[in-house]
Amino acid sequence: MVRVIKMENKRIIFHVDVNNAFLSWDAAYRIQHGSTIDLRDIPSIVGGNQATRHGIVLAKSIPTKKFNIITGESIWQAKQKCPNLVVVPPNYHLYMQCSSALIKILEEYSDKLQIYSIDECFIDFTKMRQLLGDPLTVANQLKSRIKKELGFTVNIGISSNKLLAKMAGELKKPDLVHTLYPEEIKNKMWILPVEDLFMVGRATTLKLHKLGIYTIGQLAQTDIELLKYTFKKSGIILWNYSNGIENSFIENKKLTNIKSISNSTTMHFDVEDKETAFKVLLSLVETVAMRLRHSGYYCRIISVLIKTSDLHSYSHQKKLVAPLNCTNAIYDILKKLFIDTWKGEPIRLLGIKVSDLTENEFYQFSLFEKSLEKQLKIDSTIDSIRMKYGSKSIFRSCFVWSGLSPLEGGVSEEFTVMSSIL
Amino acid sequence: MKVLMKPIKMIALFEKNGLLTPIRYQFINESKENITICIDKVITKAEEKIAGNHMYIYKCKSIINKIEKIYELKYELNSCKWYLYKI
Image (cartoon, rainbow over all chains, first blue to last red; front, side, top):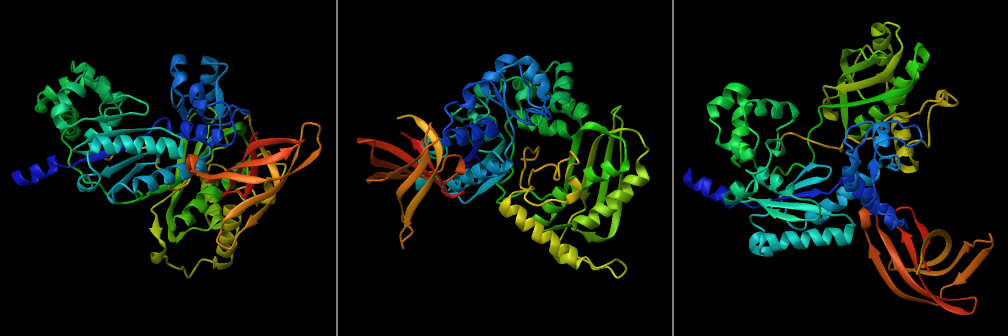
């Protein structure tokens, strides 16, 4: 056991995190295309659509801090705080491209790499040390190389486990390398406010404050029994994390398994008739079904979510006998679900979700349902046209002059923005 | 040099080994006239992958209105578009 712990202590983990990812990526791309303004130097955000003022703040530049703009608030709120704010729409295709380019470079530094989210990666540098040398020097070289080759900056955190490496990466931004080895915890991590610790969210912070715990150091020195009593099992995790104890391995898994695919849209008008609602559902299912097919899954549960104009929401779902991935078939079920559940009030938001996903090899043909062979052929043709010529290169005629977008949402299934599991 | 990033029409040579050399291009100036320019010399060629987007940058020399000018062209691999980048 002692030997195992010794081995553990020798581990060297890098946490690579892109600074203001979406915004930096957009800024770099714009500069490459001749823009003289760097979005990172002016108050700017990524999110929604500037013309319709629809959507939320997904990412923000450092100068927006002065205006107290918060990630997640609506665009018009942000605009009120800063009238000169530059809003750029998100470009998920570009983000995937930037993320892949980053991973390609990181793969040169170690074969043990875990893609934690679209803009974060863990690298196990333990064995590469003998080949490439001092971790701090390599990290600095890597950081400069990414900046030079890809045009955006990253923070690199170095430590002996994933938690500490991640905490190190968050220390001071942007464009810096930090170390946070166990012996440095006291000076570098314990002085931080408790809400800066990984896994401590808004609710936990409040509870900790009530216990008189304001810094990570105070949390680390708290009696574990008290934390267990207040937070149950997660109390132990909190105590461990505050003491820098975390032993999970770098999972060489490229992507996290998806459990469900969902899509929803807030309409710029209240939907009051069935036909319009059906069109909105169709626009949502077009994207969801395409993502489902693209990831090679079939769904067994389909659900619909309705939020009314007085912000009351309810949902309805159905479990299928035969798994599906065909746009029209999913749409038919959604229509039925919608009719069953809608009480006739004005609708502000419509959402759909497909879950209980299975892979192709378990596909069960049904004796009692009509064959979807032809439909699936059309689906795959439409998918390939859209992949080649853009998502709106081909769409259903019912959307012409309808004022509705033929496809809603665009985030691909490979798009992990955040995760709470290390 | 000033950044222009203007899309241009281009005649280029694709060698058997994949090498790409720009030969002659056309762009519309401020008075909406078509201007054709022959590239006299490609001085340097560089590759960049800013934001994961691959582009070739050619530093070229041409005689424009009897004045020898040095400028940069960009070729975007993803979209197969040519740009007059800097002049």
